[in-house]
Image (cartoon, rainbow over the protein chains, first blue to last red):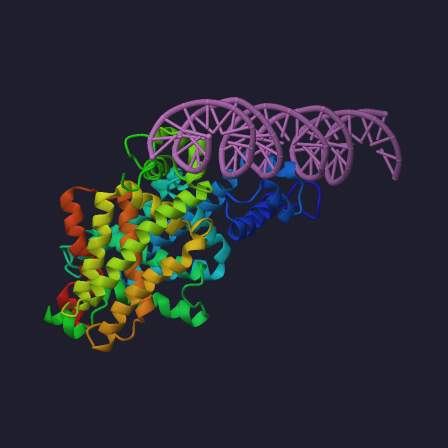
Length: 210
Length: 210
DNA sequence: GCTTCTGGATTGACTGGTCAGTCAATGGAG
DNA sequence: CTCCATTGACTGACCAGTCAATCCAGAAGC
């Protein structure tokens, strides 16, 4: 029966555990929750968690790796669309990330709070993967620098940090209810974050005068 | 003898413990270190830590509160200088934060990694203080929006997030050796981060044409 | 069709180690 | 002599990870 085991009605217990972990990690935080919390949330015996995962960390690893790769693939795909300007590409990237949060806020919260923003403890292991995202974004900027669309005195790596940092801060603000989060807010944010970073905060008159 | 206790050569043991904690927290992370590590680093008995602090967390609390207040005061002071433009004010704020990292990288690492970027676990308690910073920055932006220097279609709160997020991402990149960090890099970053956020990544010709 | 066998799925009690926080004892400055 | 800084061994709680037992779906044999 599909990819399921023997018992139950064909439910994939590994998936059930992962989904439960998303909820528990988002609610209590990775460090503050017990493995038994995850097992309870999944409606599964404690030991079964260790049948599917070698450790508590491996659960988080799996969640991060799955999702982050999706994002990397998306960025590569967006970057490959020749007809788009750099601003449009960055807009699509921002849109993808914002939509990810919109559709799976718990998962994104876990990834950002427990991995991306925890590069010290847990995320250290994932720095290479995280860097890949920076580099892909930097690649988009670099191209625009080369063709004169973007300022040449701001390095692509530096620009990528500003761009990514702004987006992550936005998600963080939503996660902790610092900014409002209606459907409208999400949609508007997609355009605004690009406008802010690419076009700048200063009104065009001032920007042109400089 | 000043603010010291009886024994020793007038050394303030509380300060010694705090300084040791900065090093240990920065090196091993708050969660992965033991209180005994801090005591050892400070060259002090385990129990003395609990003579000066009621818990391990209170040490981190103290470090954060001290430093963050310094930053809030600095921002208020910068904002009060009437003759500065919004861009200049933001530049000073960025400069202050970057210099803080430059002069006390361990302390700033602890504050960012363990508090600011850990709003889930520990930082939750400090969200109000963290928000104050956002609001002060938003205030600077708001003023520029009112006098037409900054675009009115980007809300001040949103802009503040982008600005602060970009800076924090910069520090994070330095902390984890993702960006180079010579004295020159720090100095250049001060101007560039403001140029990126206020002026935008797009070259002026493009920005003006839009 | 019925029974037995097999191996992975599932269970949850238990262990071993870790560590924050306690506290009774010590010591030395005033 | 008193008071408080200082010491460090100890305790109680917590929890990740282990493991032996059990269960059950389907395969194999009859």
